[in-house]
Image 1 (cartoon, one colour):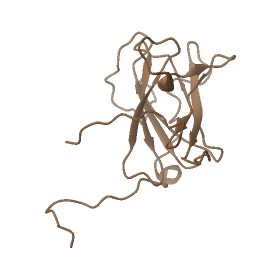
Image 2 (cartoon, one colour; image 1 turned 45 degrees about the horizontal axis):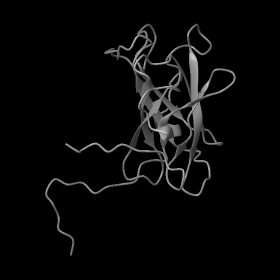
Image 3 (cartoon, helix red, strand yellow; image 1 turned 180 degrees about the vertical axis):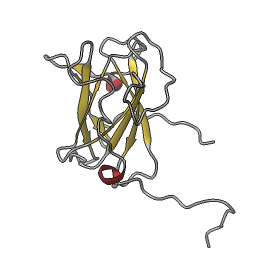
Image 4 (cartoon, helix red, strand yellow; image 1 turned 90 degrees about the horizontal axis):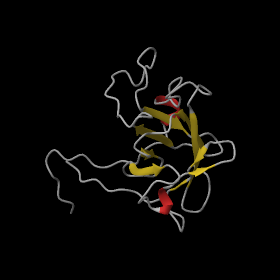
Length: 168
């Protein structure tokens, strides 16, 4: 018999409701697409068998180009708020996500991954190419057109390095 702990809530899997309940217009544009100094960060999300995940959600938090992490309210409604350093992108049917942002002055993006079948969200980082001390598996590649690409593998031989944080 399972012991019942007062106040404990049983776990449930995360998703796959993101596209219907959590996306909003402009969620992946931390800065306007194509604006001066902007860069596209993009990639694909794959499951353990190498199939794309068409219903994942990726969130990023980052510093601005000068290395300052903004403490700005209104991340969900950017109109006039300026650069908030936070964005959300749902994968499309091909498993693709993207952000229009700036390259962070601290050389990395903090990333949270939500996907069907996960019991909790996953945390990782994406480092800029050339970042000192970064694990190879956490470094984005720069494409010929200047975009940054970082694919996320939830499991398998190419599994992305995920970070563990203690629960409160």
